Length: 275
Image (cartoon, rainbow, N blue to C red):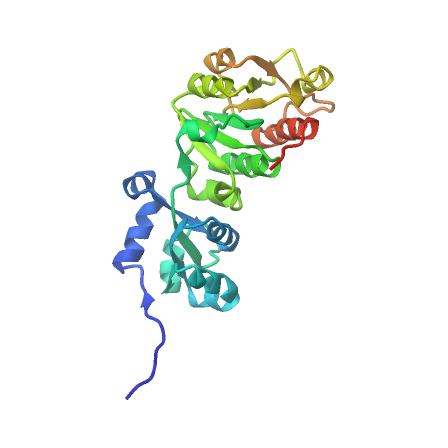
């Protein structure tokens, strides 16, 4: 009698793998309320978020290289399924897949839950279209100790694979919400005592003024716009004020993620967050 107990290896045609592949589309994610976290670091951070992970798929190579990751999943009662290399490739959006993917519950919460009365720093994304930029801003907001990130209007889906990877797991640390538009987000921020500042390269006021007059030491919500077009007139009107990052050299401007990092850290350094 055979005593071979090697785990079943799922292929790309296995129904569970096929269902996971549908989560690579926005419609698929909305349908079941789940998304994919691809790569070792995002999966590790997903496991640190209590009861967030539904299942992990791992190739033989990934299982051999990262046994502690799969052991941690098993200890939490998370199903760990072995998959073929081909299945791993089809569950990946990267050129060189790491062979490990987690199916996770979506992270967005209602806007009212994202903004407690104690909030002191919030990032609002308005029309940001590149998922890499959105993920980088989420990562930066997390690092700066922000309380939440609010995505508005047609801003990219936070559960987009590139966004999740660019956040390096920060989507599991920081509260993320979505608002219909900047006006809704701005009003919600003001209700909990946040001053709403639009980051606008054409603003007459720059960060140095806000540092000198103490504005950055107050609770602030920063609004960041589209990579190519910035903030439209409606978004600027929804803010309490606008400010630009000063340019000291010959560069025309900073890209979105860099400008967001400067603004968020200027606020964090003026009044270090407690979290």
